[in-house]
Image (cartoon, rainbow, N blue to C red; front, side, top):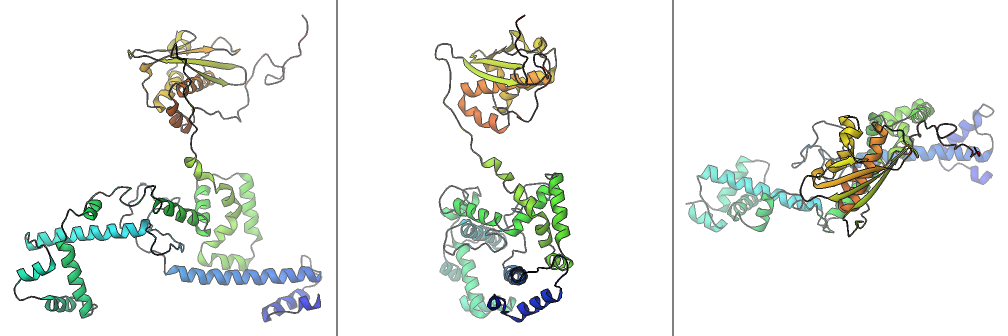
Length: 441
């Protein structure tokens, strides 16, 4: 143990002396082992901070400070919830993409140089009044008494930062891009700026790389903090989260707080650490696929059947749906038109027709009859019954046209919030789920 405790560095020695001088006070480590781990953790923290400071200093140079050329803000509010605005890829902080990968950024750079060439050409046509030449030599032949050297000298006189040979290279490059015909494939590409033009397709070189950066980026401390702040501002926290944040904040010593707020950022991470772990997966819901089953349609009648229920046993509906080629289909509930069954409550009738809207169908193209199997009271004109009908209709549509399952599932018409308690129902002792004992009577 003595050998273990012999201090490695002066800092170790200082911390050991401190621990010894504070001995006997509350909360100060007593045994040698505890003291050792306490000293080591302090030193580890100091090293970590040092490292991260160096790392930030290195990364600061790589941080893009201006808005990218093609960064268009698609959102009319400037939210900090979206780190993808105003950014060039590969993205801060310090995403490294090996050179020579034909990734999104290299493709976009080619595209950008083509766009620049295009605008150069337009400017030249404006200034020169439509003078066109097929090659660089062609140009020098058409202007009297000017050669490459002279043009280079003129340009280097205009731009004193450029050396002579750089100015000549610039002139040559500009002349080359002016003489390049407008219909080369890459020019056509630059005129079509679409997702594929920028490499956002499934070609293994582009999109997967893009996803990989995104994946790496979401692992960074900066992104986690940013995301936690965003979700916090959208009130995603509960009481317990706030209690934990408060604790995290109070656990920070003055020195820690001071050191962490030096970059006006890390203290957020320290406080929101647990919260950010909680909300980490919340924005991936849009990536979850939807299961698509084969159609279940009765071959003779062309009828598909969907099932919907709400409030335990109270409302159970079955919807029968079939195509109506005459475009005069109707929706009936227990044989009555919706207006009668729902007592002219338009918002309930709309609820039942909502699945057709979501699936981009016209309800006139279908005949729907909804029958009730539940033990409900005579009136069905309430939200819960309408919800059950809606679910039955949505399920029936998916059985008839399987692809509509995608919009219907995404809009939540095929799912129930299972946290809702069943309402009052007289057949049960507690009005909810305990059935009466059967007694002979």
